[in-house]
Length: 140
Image (tube, rainbow, N blue to C red; front, side, top):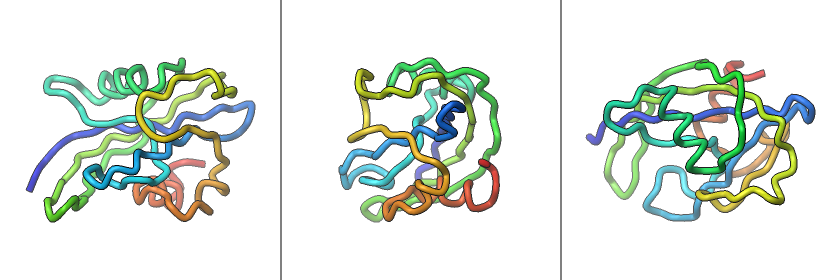
């Protein structure tokens, strides 16, 4: 079993009352391809979860995110091509004033968009982690 650590973040635009989600790349070699997920990713050796999420935000989308705080940590298991990955995941929430995504440069994923929690839960291709965190009330 491959063990790794990762950090993901719910980014909320309070003016819109919506969260930023990323449509992951359609690559069968990644975990949960072609699903709506969160910004974030794997932690580098020596990084703590907060350092990792700030780095991932800069690498993936480079928008300003404020008031970042951890809301949950948990272990989750994924399978990719018969390989089992156990991920120690750290989940955060933060806020942004950014609402116009037309001029942002998305460095990972197919596209980014804002959704209300009700809208994202209706998507047929939602990440298992997002669905669980929302349905259990960690994000409101």
